[in-house]
Image 1 (cartoon, each protein chain N blue to C red):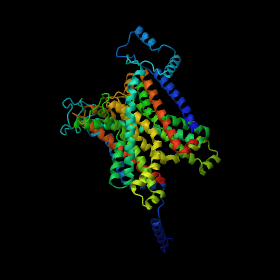
Image 2 (image 1 turned 90 degrees about the horizontal axis):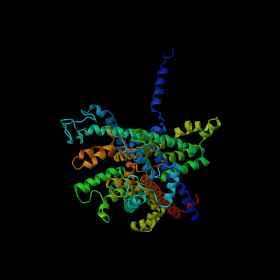
Image 3 (image 1 turned 180 degrees about the vertical axis):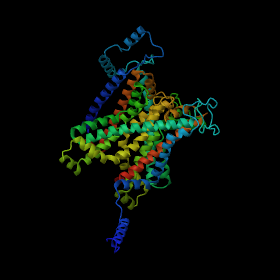
Image 4 (image 1 turned 30 degrees about the vertical axis):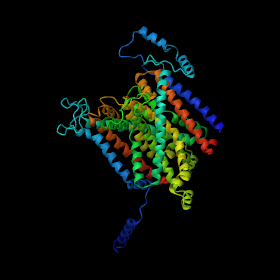
Length: 305
Length: 307
C-alpha cells in the first residue's frame, strides 16, 4: 500500500524538483562549444561554410546546366537569368555557376583528403618522436627542421610534373608535405602528456608503447589537432589552387577553383564574371576557415586567452 | 659564438647534398623525358642526343659527374633551351629574383613593423581595426589571385602601372610585383609586432616610463620597440623562404625573367637540367638565409647559443 499516504508521490516530486534545480555538470567539450558559439565571427563562419559545402554538393542537381555541358547558343555570355546561366558562360559555352560549384567540390575534396593525410602523418610522427624521446626524438625532429627549411612547393611541382597530373597524387603529395607543423605540435603535447599519471598507470598495467600512444595519448591530442587541422585546410586550398593555376592540378573537364581562376584571369577584362565568381568563393571560404580556426583556438585552448 | 656558427654551417652542408641527391634520382628515375615530343625521334638521333647529354652512362656515373660539375659552378646544359647552359640561365635570372625578393623583404618588413606598431598603440580603435582587416586580407587572399586582381585594377582599369613584363632598369615594372610579394610578408610581420607590442606596452617598465612623464613617442622609441621586435627576427628566416617561393608565383603571373619563371617553365617542359639547377639554387639560398638569421638571433639572444 505504498501510495496511500501520498508520501511517495510527494518525495518523487521533491526529488524531481531537486534534479531540475541541481546545477548541471558541463564537460570540457561543452565548455569549448559554448565558448565557440559565443564567438560571433566563428559562428557566422560555420554557417557560411556549411552553406558553401551544401551548395557545392547539392546545388548542381538543381541547375539547368551540367558543368561539362556546352550551350552552343550561349558562348562567352554575361549572366542571363532567362536561360539559366546565372553567372554567365565561359569561352566554351559552359555554365559558370555549375563549373564553380564543381570546382568548389573538387577544392574542398582535395583539402579534406590532403588534410587527413597530413594530420595522420603528423600525429603518428609527432607522437612517436615525443613518446620515445631521447635520440629517436632528436633525430626525428632534426629531420623536421631540415624539411622546414626546404621550399616544399618546388617538390610538389616536381612530383606532380613527374608522376602525372592525377588528383589522387595531388592529395597525397600535398598532404605528405604539409605535416611538419602538425608533427611539431603533437610532439610538444606528447612530451607533456607522457609525464601524466594515467600513462604511468597504463605502463604499470603492462601496455606496450604503441597501445599507450594510440589508446592513451592520441585521444588527448584532439584539441590542438582540431585547431591546427582547421588552419591547415586553407593552406592546402591555396597550394592546390596555385598548382591548378599553373596547369598542374585538376584537369579538364573536371575543374577546381584554382583552374577556374587561371582560365578567368587572362580574360577578366572582357569576361569579368569568369574571374570573379570562383575568386569570390575562394576568398569567402578561406576567410571563414581562418575565422573558424581562430575561434577554435580560443575555444579549445583557454591558456591563450 | 664562432663555434655555434661553425656547427650550423657544418649541418647545412649535408642538407644541400641530400637535396641534390634526392632530386637528381627522382628526376632521372621518372618516366618520360625532355626528348618526348609530339613525334618520336628516330632511334639513332635519340641515341646521339642521349650520348651528348651523358644520359647513356650508368646512373651513378652521371650523378658523380653532375656533383663534380656543380662544385665547379657548372650546372650542365639545359635540355630544352639548347642555346643556353643552366649556369648562364641562372646568371640571367638570379639577380632579378634577388632584387625582387629583397625589395619586397625591405618594403614588407618595414611596412609591417610600422603597421603593427600603429595598430598596437591604437589598440581597439579604428586604426587598429582597419590595419587588422588589411593584414587579414593580405594574408588570406592567395598571392596569385591578388596579383591578378591588382593587375586588372591598376593595369587594365586605371592604366597607372604596366600589367606585367620587365625592361631592365625600369622601376615602374617592379611596383606591382614588389607590392604583391611584400603584402603577405608585411602582414605576418605586422601581426607579430602588434601582438608583442601590446604585451610590451602592458609591462611594468613601460608603466614606470609613463609615470615618470615620458611622451608616447619616446616610450615607443626607447623602451617598447626593441623588445617588441625580437619575435620578428625569428620570423625573418621562414619569412625569407616564403618570399622566395612567393616570387615563383609573382614571376609567373607578371611574366618576369627570374629563376622562378625558369623553374616552372623547365618543370612543365621536363627540362631536368634546369629544374635541378634552379631547385638546388633555391635550397641553397634559403638555407644560407636561414643560417644567417639563426646566427643573427644567436648574437642577439645569448641563450640560443648554448641549447
